[in-house]
Structure formats: structure tokens, C-alpha cells
Amino acid sequence: MKFMKLGSKPDSFQGDGENIRYVATELATDIVISIGDIKFYLHKFPLLSKSARLQKLVASANDDNSDEIQIGDIPGGPAAFEICVKFCYGMTVTLNAYNVVAARCAAEYLEMYETIEKGNLIYKIEVFLNSSILRSWKDSIIVLQTTKSLRPWSEELKVVSRCLDSISSKASIDTSKVDWSYTYNRKKLPSENGSDPHWNGVRKQQVVPKDWWVEDLCELQIDLYKRVITTIMAKDMISSEVIGEALSAYALRRLPGFAKGVIQTNDMAKHRSLVETILWLLPVEEGSVSCSFLLRLLRAVILLECGEMEKNELRRRIGQQLDEAVFPDLLFRAPDGEEMLYDVDTVQSLVEEFVMHNRCAQADPTVDSEFHEFKTPHQRGSDAMARVARLIDGYLAEIARDPNLPVLRFVGLANLISAFPRATHDGLYRAIDMYLKEHPDISKSERKKVCKMMDCSKLSADACMHAVQNERLPLRVVVQVLFFEQMRTTTTSSGNTTPTLPGPIAALLPGGSHGSSRSATTNTNTEEDWDGVPTAEEIKALKGELASLRLGEKNGNHDSLKNSNAEKAKMKGLLVSKIFSKLWSSKERQGEISSSDTSESPGSGNAGDTKSTPSRSRRHSVS
Image: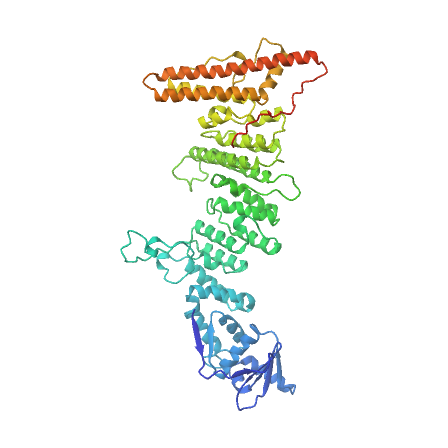
């Protein structure tokens, strides 16, 4: 820290209690100056030789036959006044970044100009400010902080504007020219620790990071911080990404709990003002701040009850880069009073913004071309949609654990991304399985609506193996999974066509015919049976046949010389067809029993939306 010493005489100021200050000298004092509650017993001559204002005040006091002067509005108060008095007496006084502005404002108040005496206090302080303080990075920040309590004097004397220019100029300078100390929290490089295997003992000069200045500015209050960032941005020398990093660092420092998504509301007005200022300062360029930071800002905006304008602007910006998010950042807690755990509506609005932005980008190839030079709009859109699909699949799997999440909310969000490209539907299957596990009492039609979102042909082999043993899935879905897994196996092994299936089972597959020679009533009952969950007997049968299928694959792998790929495919096809046949035989038997029961009990009705009943011997799958 820079400092300047003025005067050469020893400091002879003394105190008598807390409210009296005097100069210890043989000469009797002849004037009393009251600054607030403190009385200064002083001598007229040294004061009047350097202060035009005191000359006027003493003359006025003499006219009133008084030897006491009241000064209540001097900037900096008693401490700043004492610095000025010591200078008048020629006593040693030290100026530094913490007291120089107060002394400058007090000297201006006392009119300590060069016209009164050459080398007066105002001149000396200005030299110190311009030659030392404003040339120092950290001293400029300290001085700027002290100006807040000295307004409007510090503004009128251009101290604030000079600090802003100094700080912004240093922040905007080429990093190769930064040769002063600064605060920058980062892990040390291996060469700095001496642990780098390629380090030969000669330390190379470390490259100064572009955001070297952001942490030092976090010391500023929000009003001064806003002015500094605005001045830096006006110079147009700093990239929007670095500005975004600065805003993120400031929010983490100044908003308790911001990193964890929990904002303390003990000072709502203060924190709301801070968040709104950060939003106002956000660079307009897309990608200048991370999506994770924007999502945390949105959470803060909601918790602090900021205006709808701020919420809508954040939703728009998040929608533009939603593909960069991770699903834990989407877990907004539901407002107080709601039964659900999470705020699904907010996430749905973000997905809708993304869809709209992506549609606009596809229609206008110039959108975002500045930030994505090497991909066509179609490629960018397809890649982004695939990432958002994975993101929302993970989010759906998490919120599915909420027992109060309605089917319509779950399905509505999933349908927004139903057309998005996915390599597999394994993530969506996990979400569906979790929802069915946590909501066992939903009706058959609701269960069908949930499972309809999944494309069974896009499940991986492991997911297929899990699904066909999953007692929570309707049999219709189990049949589809088996069919598409068999298609993949036969196509991969020998290029064979799809296996021959019983007509009623083929009708359950996508694109299959639902026509039947049976009566309409029987067909309806069969449809309801296939939409129900499998029984314990059916699950047991599937396990046995799947074990045989795996055994056949294992034997085929160990005896590849005896069995060709075509033979193995044929064996798998027969086994899967056997599974289909067993399922159909089971359903036919159940249909006969159901018909018999119906004829014996005419009063019993068959409701299309009856609640699904879990099997007694339920085996819970791992989700």
C-alpha cells in the first residue's frame, strides 16, 4: 500500500476523555472548534494561515464575541478534521488509501487552496493521488470503497470518476503488461509446487489469466461494482465471457448460499437489488455466461420474488443454451403450499423456450452463426436436441420419485422432447420405470399413456433384458421389447427377416393390425389384458425362457465351430417365438376363465380404467 508522510514536527495531539482533543504546548489555546461531539482546543494562527474557511468562521465568531466555532457538516468528521489541523501545525501525518479521500474532502471544505499558501494540503493530496494511489491496482479499489461515505464531495471532486477510470484501464490492459499483485484463487500449477516431472528447476514466468481481476472487484458494494463493470464494458476491451465470469464470481461472493441454490431471505430487499443488478449487467452475447449460472440466477429470482420481466428474460436466455445444463440444476423446489416436490412448470417453460429458439435457428441459418462457425444450423440443432433429450430424461427419472407428481405433468414434459433424436431410449425407460414404481396405483389407461412415450426398438440389450422381466410394465410393452430384441438379434446374426408370430400378438406391435375374428367384446377384454401388468406365472415363464435364451447364446459362443451364426439366430428365433406362444396361451386361458366368470356373475362389470393390482410374488427390478 502506498503512503505519504507530511510534516516533520512530533505529534503533540492529546485527549482528555473521549470528547476533548488539544495540542500540548506552552501557549494557551485561543479558539475552540466543535466537530460533532468532540471539542478541539487550538490556536488561531496556524489554522488561519492555511484555511480560508476558518478565516471566515473566526471573523464571524469575533463579531459575536465568541471564541467557539461549531462545524457539523465537514466531510470525514473529526478524524479528517484532525488530519487537516495537524498539517496546519506542521506535525507528522501519514496519508494512505484509507484516509486520503476523507482528507481531500475535508481540505476542500476548509478551502485549503494554493491561493492561501503555496504547497497547501489540497495540492499535496492531489499529487499523492495522481502519482501513487491511482497508479496502484489495489489502492485504487480501496480508495473507491471509501468514496461512498463521502458523497457528494467525492463525486464533485472527481475522485470517483478517476478511480473508475484507473480500475477499468488496468482491468482492460493486455495481460502481458500486468506486473502488479492481484488476488486470484486457483490451484497451483505442478511447476509451482516443484512436482512437475518436466520442471528442471528454472521457474518460468506464469501467464496472467484473462480474468485475473474479477476477485478483487468482489470487494466492492453493488452500486460501485455496477459502475466499474459498466465502465469496463464501455471500453470494449474485455470479452463477454470474462465479464460473465466476473458476474458469476461476484454472485458467489455476495449471495450467501448461491452456489447451493439456497438464498438467505433475511434481507430480501438488499439481495433482490443485487440480483437485479447482475441481470442488468449480463452481456447480451449468447454463451457469455454458463447455463448453470443462469439457472442459479433463475432460482434466486424466484426465491427473492423478483419481477416477471426478470424471470422471462432469464427463461429466454436459458432456453438458448439449455443443452449445456445438468439436471441437478433443474431441480427447482416447488413453491410453498404445493404438494409436489419440484417446480415442473418452470422446467417445462425452459424446454418450450429451447424448442422455440431451436425452431427459429433452423428457419434462419444466420442465427448463432457467429458463435458456431463450423457446424450447419441443422447439425447444431440436432446435437443440441440430443443433449436436451438426455438432460430431460435424467430430470424425469429424478422427479418420478415424487409420489405427488401427476401423470399429466410427467407425460406433458416428456412429450415436449418426444421428437428429439436419441441414441437409445434407456434414459426414458429408467424414468418410466421409476414413475411406475413410485405410483403403483395408477390406472391401466394412465400406465399405457406413460409407457407409450417409449420406443421399444431403441432400447439397448441390457435395457431389453431388464424390461422383459419388469412386472411393472404392461404385457403389451413386454411383447414389443421381445419382438424388437429378436429383430435386432436375427438381423445382426444372419440378416433374417422378422420371426413369425401369432396373429393376436402381431397386432400388439407398432403398425400391427387389430382386426380379429373374435367378437368385439372379446377383443376389448384382450386389449385390457395386454395393457395390464404381467402375473407372477407369466413373469416366471419369461424368466425361464430368457434363461434358456442366455444359455443358448453362451453355448453358441463357446462352440462357435459347431454352430454357425445362422443356426444360432434360428435357435434364438425359436426360443423367442416359444415365449410369445406361452404368453398368448396364458392370455387365452385367462380370457376363457374371464368369460366363464362373467357368465356366472352377470352383476360384475369390467371397467376400462380399473386399478392395476401388483402380483403377490412381485420381484422389484432395479432402477
